[in-house]
Length: 230
Ligand code: GLP
Image (cartoon, rainbow, N blue to C red):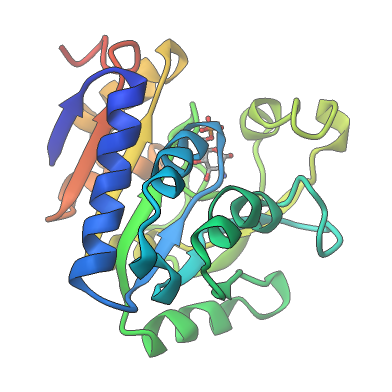
């Protein structure tokens, strides 16, 4: 695992440059994008670069809340469209569907696999919405969200009681089969889980720790998120 620590602005620019390089090196490749406050900073940096090759790439949204209407402004699909897809001119967009989860993996395969997955991390170690105790060999599947994850996202929904109970997500196996992975984390509230990601056992209780075994994994951190691994 490669680890890079710098300011939030520099990390966001570095992550954006990595995405741009893959789009240029592998025209039309498939990429997976997670929504979140952290990755939004990366997408802001990326769209400011005006990378024309991105428009040809296929975009797979890593996960989605259950029970939201199409076009709900809180959905991952809506946010990613606003923050990245529409600004970059990307039109080949794929979103996981709880009613037909297998279809998403078939679509990934048809596109030749994910060239690059861009992830954030939950304070409980979730990636996408793969919560603790998710099996390592999971493909796209539906999940019940934990209280911790719901609390993390309560602000977006105007209160804990409004956060959906379930979601659909690329599985750990789907994510780990990506040829390249970058995971971005900012802030001291992520410091403990980043320590577990880097030094912890690869137990299913810390889903992100599975990325220790990935051959092309880059962890991008600001100083606060890195404070327990220095
Ligand atoms: C959310 C999403 C993840 C995201 C993570 C971190 O619950 N399902 O895909 O990467 O948690 O989000 P944030 O960057 O807002 O802390």
